[in-house]
Amino acid sequence: MNTARIFTRRPIFRCLNPPPTALRTRPQFRHVSSKEPVPRSKSEADLLYRRARRRSSSDIDINLDHVSVHRAEAIRRAYLTKRRNKLLLGAVLSMLAPIILVRIWPMPPETKAKIEAEANDRFQETEEKIKAAILPRPTQTDSPRSASESFQGKKVVIGTGDKILAAPESSVGDAKPTDPDAIELVPTGTSYVPYFPKTVTLPDGNTNSTGSTEQEYTLLGLGIRKVSFLRVQVYILGLYICNSDLHILQNALINTVNPTASALIPGEKDDLRAALLDPDRSTQIWESILEKQGTTQAVRMAWRVVPVRGTDFKHLQDGWMRGVAGRTDEVKRKQQDLLRQQAVEQKVIALPKPVQESEFDDESFGLAMKEFKGLFQGRGKAAKGSVILLTRNKEGVLGALYQPLLRTKEGEREGELVRLGEVRDQRVGKLVWLMYLGGKNVSSEDARRNIVEGCVGITERPVGTVEGMVQ
Image 1 (cartoon, one colour):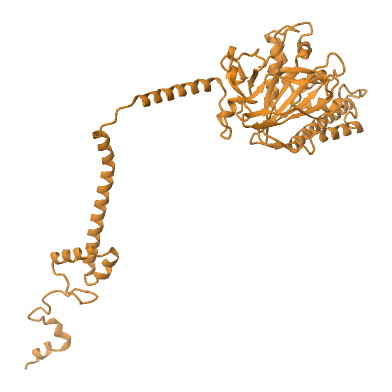
Image 2: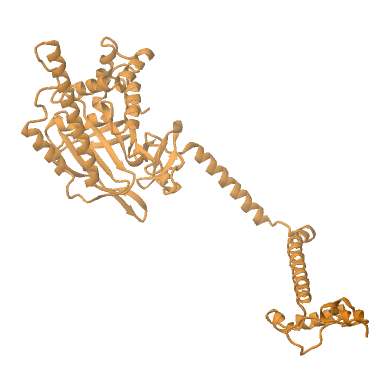
């Protein structure tokens, strides 16, 4: 054997000599077990797939362990594709079926009763629209529309002259403002307490004797008391003037602008409006009216306060006490400013009325404030819709009355008027009135502006001819 032949047979060069035939006739498939033969064609794989479909989906992976990886993935993809197509077909058919049924299925003919019911519904809808255009609609979600359809157990209707009236059920059809059982109403602008009566009847003076007479008061203006930056509504209050004293108030307001006139012209009415809204002049005007106690020129007035949500007397008392304290501090501050100004000018100190030294520092005023605080202590809750009245007679005596709201089967009605007490010091009543009428910061700006419009309204007629107007 020659050297070249021996050299090619060495192990290192043996790989360079290819075998005469292939080592394997077909590729070997990788599989986990060899219990069943490996499918060699597409027909065998489809047969295996149909067998697997008869079993549960959880057994597919377990029973196909003999199938190669790529074939198992192909089977799974084919199964999911068919499932998707069936679901898509079902969704399309579920959308098309109602359309086809509506188009093909004949509609049943309308009966006479159904036509009459639809006509009745349209009539009621039109009636509600007309009522909504006349009556105030609720503006809050917690007050139902029925709250604005009744007042003190009476039905709210539109009477002659487009006036809102609360009349009994028996006289709803032909209700008139002059009817003895009818109550003329004024919208408040809120759904909590939709209406205020235009006139109220209150006991004359602050005595609770059986022989006391009653006087009729007319609403001059009203507004909503709001607190905090959220403008939460607390109560609605309105200022009522005794009908027999309206001409006194009218004459006093006219004299502030034109002492020689009996009524104001448009330009003078604008001057009066500006004066009543000015922080300093408004305080002077109302102080001059309130200081005429004990004379024939005194004006009997009353505040009607109605909570718009459930509260208690303690909360109302704290608000009034803070307001009175703020007024006394403002008077003292003005007094100190005046003293400093007079000292700079080197003039004799003479304080102008009504700002007098120690006006609110004496012991009698402190006792009067305790009496005012005691009017509301231990009174408990003040329900929504109940009425609290603060009156002021010709002597300047402040009286407090309470009228609860009773809920019966027939509806809501006002209970008996209860007297809470009185404060005879006229300074307390004056400060309570100035909380809402005079100064820069009043307790209810809405109420002051509405009252100012009412004051301007009564001055456009000659003195003595005003029967009561609400703007």
